[in-house]
Image (cartoon, rainbow, N blue to C red):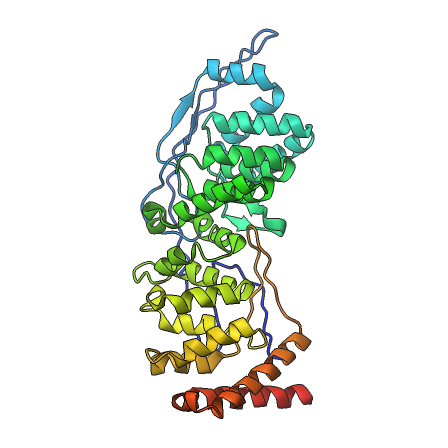
Length: 415
């Protein structure tokens, strides 16, 4: 059985396809300089008389330099005075104060273990509150613009929720999406109104997609996904969240974002973004092959300079589907097709390499052995027909290579 599936992070390992060598994404670690946070508390009286002067990280553009392992870090601090704290406590009581205390704990934690403990205690406090109380308190905290660095990565777990979040705000946006999807979708609009943090945008796009299935919500999702993909500062300073958010294009499907993705896959000086775009297009080729292949065939310039990658996508075609077979034959018979591209195609067709990953919105489908065997048999029959067809006389070498490989697969499957 040739289906080799290994657990992987979608954006942290190179894609290994038979005969395919896309650029790998190098793991980069940004050094974040975290300024000191000061926490002074003075208790007096029966009313809240606490003065908490904490230097909070605001939302804003991070330091320059591409990173695959960290979020865009805030650049300066803003102090929350006693009046701000008092108003928050009066509005939401202990949970509001607990959120601010968690931010201070994160800022003052001397090691990763203490930071994890601070987040665990906050999660416990939120979980012990009612959904409405927790949801309202989270939104009030987000409105305050306060934040704190967690020194964790942007790691996706089950159902698209985060196992790790790089900032407290990202953690809370993710948690809000878990407990109150409708409120999270509504608050996503607030986040998406300004480009303060790519990681927050990634979670907000997911929250909008899962919490607002309306036509208006989907239209907004499409618009914001397009903005994100084409936003130069985030391309150049690409956080893990930004790259993971390419999954939104896979979730939306169709071909409207294909020009943006193909533009990114052609980037010569940004391998991380180019690789994320490559993978998004590959998963579109798996999920909606006829639509993607038709778009690529209709406009050859979309993949100019990345012809080998285009061969990978066309090698996804399932010849049992008449529409896909027609697109594939048109592609193969195009006189502009180079020998190198055809050789790439011949080395991988039918492309049945899949990888398992946790994504923000979409699962990764994987065929079983019976499905692979059936597809191989149909592909072998199609190749034999092409070899006998005078139109394909100039494609004998790559087609014979495919034929030999598929015959080997068939022999092994019969044992």
